[in-house]
Length: 505
Ligand code: ADP
Ligand code: MG
Image (cartoon, rainbow, N blue to C red):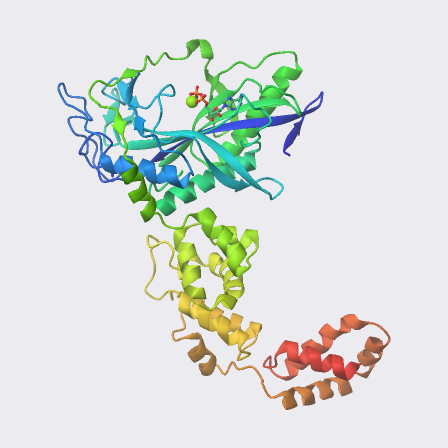
C-alpha cells in the first residue's frame, strides 16, 4: 500500500475523482448548435439563442447525448436510472449567460448510478474502483481576457456542450470497503481506464490536452489503519496526468504537515499552480457557493425505458477490460502486454488483424508491436491525424504476420527479420518475403553446411574448446557467434547451438 512517512508515523491517502468528459455529439445538450467548437471556429458562430439565453428560449434535451450517457454507464458496469431529473445550479458568471448551469444534482438520481472500473493497484493486483454516479450537465463558454485592451471577451461556442461527470465512490458507512483510489499512480490508471472506455465506446475523445477530459481531485489523509476518513480538500480543473499526480502528493504532504503540527485540515477548494507544482487555497468552505439548486421547470423528468438500454447494450463493442482478460486467457499474453495492446481500439484491432486465425502468432506479434512498432508511430497507422510524407512506408498487419511466420517456419532468423523490418521502416517496398529474396536473406537450412562450419570453428579454437570442456560453459555464446560469422549470419542459431553442444560434449 502506498504510504507517506510523516514526522510522527505513516499516513495513507484517500482520493476521490470527479472526472468531466465531453460527450461526442453533433449538437449541444439542450440546443441545436454544433458541439464541435474547435479553436479554428470563429467565436460565437456556434452559439444558438438557447446558448445565449435569449428570453423565451426553451432547452430541448438531445436524445443522442442521453444515449451516450447510457452507453458510458454500461461501460462503467453501472445501473442506469429509469427516472432522473435536471435542475438549475445557480451561479452568476459571464461564461454562462443563463446565470445557471443545467445539471443533475447529487440529491436527485443521476442518469448513471453505482458502477465500477477495474485497474491494477500498485502491487500489480486487479482492483475495483467504485463509481458513485455519472450525470449529464452543460459546459460553460470561454472568456478571453487578452483579446482587447480594456474589455473581456466571451466566446459561447462551448456553452451548453454536454459533459458527463463521473464521480468515484467512497463508502463512508463501510470504511473497510477499500474500493477507492489510494495513490497517485492509481489515480492515473483510473483516469486512463475512463479514457479508454470512453474512447472505445465513442462517447468522448477524453483528451486531457484538448480539455475534453478534466478532473477535480479530492484528497484526504489518515494514519495507516485509522478507522475514520480525514477531511478532504478538492483541487479543481486538472488537465494533465502528471499535474494530477504532483498535486495529490503535494496536497497529501501539506495536510500531513498541518496535522502533525497540531492543526486541522479545513475543507477547502484548492488551485494547482503548474509552475511550482504546489496547491493554494482558492476558497474555503465558509465561502462555498450556495448553488440553490431547483428543478428546471422547462425540462420534464427523464424517463428511460428498458428497451432503449437493451438496444444500446446490444451495440456495445467488446470493452477494453473484457478484451484484456481474453488476451490473457485465450492468447496467453502477460498482463502487461494485454494492457498495452488494449490501450486503444485501433491498437487492438491492428493486433487482432495481424494475428488473424493463427493464434500462435499472438505472442510474437505482441512482442514486435510493443518493442518495435510502438517506437515508430509514423510507420504505424493508428492515428490518421499524423501528417505523413508520401515516402513513409506504412507497415500493415499483414506485413508483420508474414515476418513472424517466416521466423516460425525457419525461413529467416530473428536477426534477418530485424534487418527486413528496418528496411521496411526505411521505405523499402514489397512484402517481407520479397525483401528477403531481394537481399538474399535466407536462413541456412542445410544442416550439413552448419555441421562443417561448426567443425571448422572447433578446429580453429582449441584453447577455448579446452576451457569449455573444463567447465567454462559460458563460452557457448562465443562458439555460436563464430559459427554465425562464418555462415554470414545465415545459420539458424538454435540449430547451431544444438550441434555445438553435441560436438563439444
Ligand atoms: P462535492 O459534491 O462536494 O464535491 P461529493 O460528495 O460529490 O462532494 O464528493 C466528491 C468526491 O470526493 C467523491 O469522489 C468522493 O468519493 C470524494 N470524497 C468524499 N469524501 C472524501 C474524503 N474524506 N477523502 C477523499 N475523498 C473524498
Ligand atoms: Mg465537487
